[in-house]
Length: 188
Figure 1 (cartoon, rainbow, N blue to C red):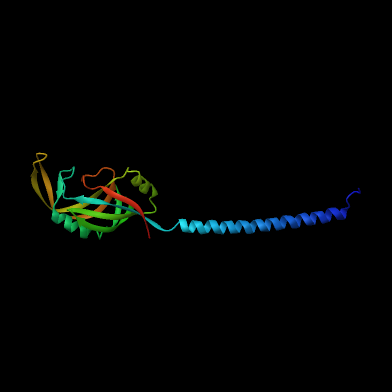
Figure 2: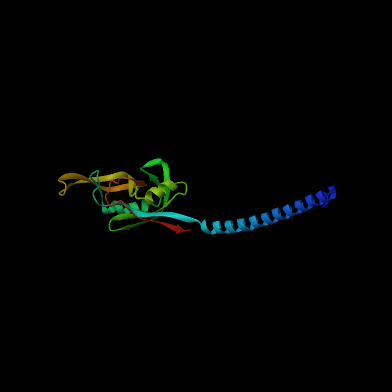
């Protein structure tokens, strides 16, 4: 067997470059095809959804502060909340966490449906875990009266007219009815 010539090595080098180039190009085409499939799947998975929470914002039941909203105040409150749609965390007006998307009244309660902001995934997680499980309202009282509550043997404040100016997600509600009743993901 004779020793390979310089010409042989040059031809072998050219052949190796061609094989490597073809393999790389095929690899790039394969990578692009796989990438397109992955991107297509991600588009399907990343369908736009809304994080929804529903519950009672307040009711005519006596709260921990010995206040009680009248039926009239609850009725007026439903209309007022359509003007104040931002939902806060613990009445901190520098920490908005979502917005009210629906308000209605049933059984002397103000029921709300809210959407959690996509900037607040931690809040959404705390709601899902049951750590945050309540609502609370903030209001400006215009007219109030007093009554004696026989159950606790103490006087309580009856809020006859008030302007409800905000709703907050809270850890501990003043009103025992102000609870989250449902949370779910809703397609947009």
